Image 1 (cartoon, rainbow, N blue to C red):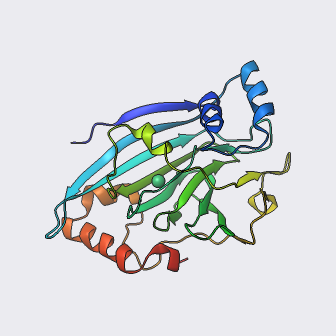
Image 2: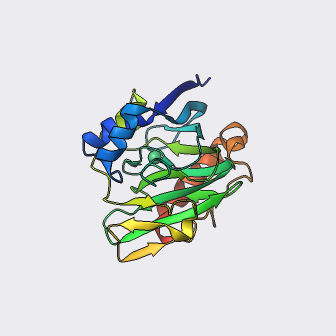
Image 3: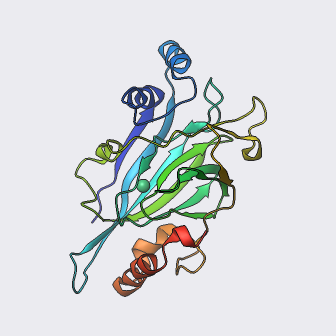
Length: 241
Ligand SMILES: [Fe+2]
């Protein structure tokens, strides 16, 4: 049975990770000064809301986990939206997000495609299928939002300590800025501007997923989860967008 662990992340933690150069922020010095005056909560993550282990014939078992993250909404003093830390998924890991409440923008950078960036908006009920091995980061510019995600073990994942997933390679040099007072994804600018910015959601077309993602790790059979993994491995999401 999964043991859910809740942890809140403050702006000061995001800043400390940016100092380690694995996170890029809009005007880090100004944001640090603002934070010294007043720190603020960004999100609370509930890890291991669901957990399943699925046996495989020729390979080690696959561990599936489900997390739920409650984001504050709005903009940081620099114009960057409230956000997650962001990280590169480990090789072979499958990950799907679904917005349970609110509205977010998920930034996805694809491996080996530095000039291509996805910054699509996802509303309640919509899913984001992360391409294999990609970087992803969630923004909550508008209001409080709740996002659930499933992910599979892969490449030594999951580590025993959740915070270690942020200790990998440096983030791609992309951040979003929203025009003051007009927090709309269409008006986001990207610094530096990559050659190709894709605003089309990375949908779950072709995947056998339930309408409500949190039910998957509760109701799906082992065979259904094996088939889901096989679909990813034979038709990576990077080709499905
Ligand atoms: Fe991830």
